[in-house]
Image (cartoon, rainbow, N blue to C red; front, top):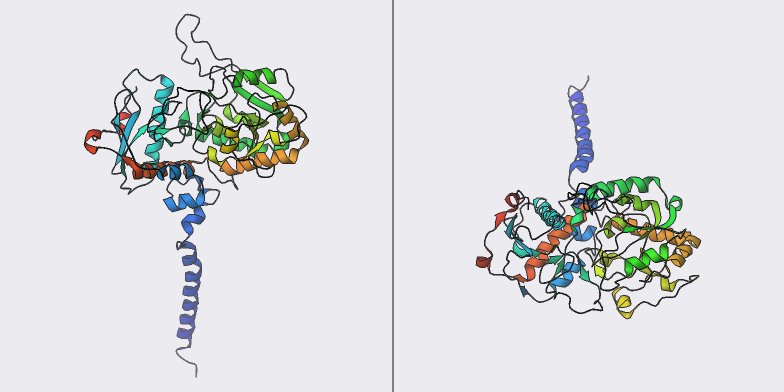
Length: 442
């Protein structure tokens, strides 16, 4: 006689197997892994993730916030009350950005007003992507080229300039450049636009097919205390050389034919290059200005060899470069001995570890360096690749110039500054919300 419960047992067994399969497959896929955040943060698609924790930031971008950690180790300092001569002073309270004091109307030219607006947008983005923060601190933002006082600044000296009379630097912390938000000249635009266009170029243009020239565009109006003739000497050395595409920018005139002011003056030039098009060359020449150069980070996204005199002004990621000194190469002409200050600031890297190249500040060995690189294409390609792999957000890149790295740095800056700054809360006041301040055109 047939077992009347047989089919019930079979059905129960089938249901049991289905349940086990469901748990093994579905739950394993959907349940969060204890290290899921870190795995995601290190993937090539995570560099748009603006919500990393501090631990994820440090794990994904080791060494990025070393400049902040070094400043925090110094003793606490007092922040002076702000006034309408600048720099801008702001505070974060209950996760909201508020402006306490700003430069009075008419004091800043349009380009510095752009910079001030951009940097506040950057800070606000870092706060908005970090919900629940109970951060409360007050800080000053210096948008001038020259660092001074105790404030956040775009650059700090890697070594002292050979001149006296510079503004005294108090407790200055490095902050990301305003161009990580946007830069008004049409050849640059937003950082997101430029980096996307660079990716398009690099995806279709291998290093060996790039133009075998050193490229530069710029103005000679900016002079450095370290090397006052830096840009003029570059133009002289590169003039009529087949290895160079070096030109001074031919800016549009300050006035129109009818005598009215030209709003595009110093914004557009007849011989300019889109910032991404520098990446079409094997070699990109970098020149500092009065202090730093805001174009450096764009060039670092290229799979190209950056050729520069030893960096005199640190930006927030400059400490990550590993220079190959041209003085260490067997060049076919020109001799150069780096200064002790330069070598203390920048240890020598080897050809198989370097991610950019230092040349003589008078450019006397620039042509010889380009020719050496052309004779050693594997070395040149390796330097270019290590630069892009460190700073770029492409598959396999480490994303140190990504939007994720930027907000990681901003939040670390806020937290690090908070640990050492001292101020009188009553004197500071509440300030006005950034959203209201942003409505004021100047």
